[in-house]
Image (tube, rainbow, N blue to C red):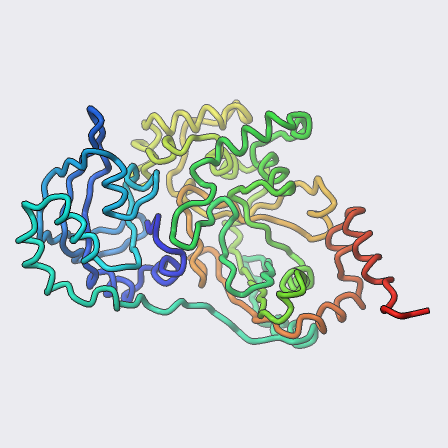
Length: 427
């Protein structure tokens, strides 16, 4: 849900609470089928109206569409015409999805009237009733910010005794800019809402394996490969987290000189025990092997089916094929609820960075979204971070710096160079 929605709007609506539902039901909306192409033409069924009676449960969002204008099936002659009318990209018209777009529905209606003059009168009749839709604002973003820290002491003060570890573990992540999204690199979007990498997930992984196959020879599981790919900078469905709050604080402060005046943040995750898995978990294998499916195959996944129906899908059988390649004993019984979840995974400490950072990962399942305030298995709080130079100096005094956090020779040389550089004019 909210695919192709501008990131800021998506974050304001992601919990689909009562204020979000009220906002959605006020918006003028277009209901369209996916584009159909034949004989060089591109056609789609188009309706204009409002979304009503929205109800939300764990698996589904239900609604009623009240059509004010039924355009029927429109022949756009060519695909580019349909893209221009709706401001869509090369993938969007081929996807079943919701999108809440910034802009004015009048503009789309005017483009339709220009292409299909037979609807000009009926479009004109409904224009006044929809006036002002561009001024509607989604609800404000929600963040559970528990305080602002400008020193190591004040930061630790917010942590001591605040988070209950009963039946849960605490992890941390630092952002040098508080505006950064809590999203794995693979699932990030351009500001207008289009994917950056997601449609090419399987290609990214396969191309890296082809180019550097020897690097992955010792990796037993698909998850192991994703960890190594993440280490080398490939966009994956993994989000790095740390068991060390000081490492997270370092990341919230460490960065380019121009970012020093920008507020950072540390995100604190309280993760329930049943959401924490190890690298060899069967559930982890199910989620990790989504990376082997093509974008078209992932589009066929229907998590609203019961377990039996889900496993009878052709795409479930393809996913099972990849899982069995690493676990021959795995039964063909994938749980759809698990496949759409977010798990905390403790990885093998196969590289020095994971060791030094007390690293673990959040593994995002199919179309999984982590709201900024958390979900039923992951509670989230935040500490705003200011006065970064002071904090970095304090951390360095207790040996938390680029050398210890990034224990590689290139980072060590940079740290030594900066630490031993003499002031200009020194004799």
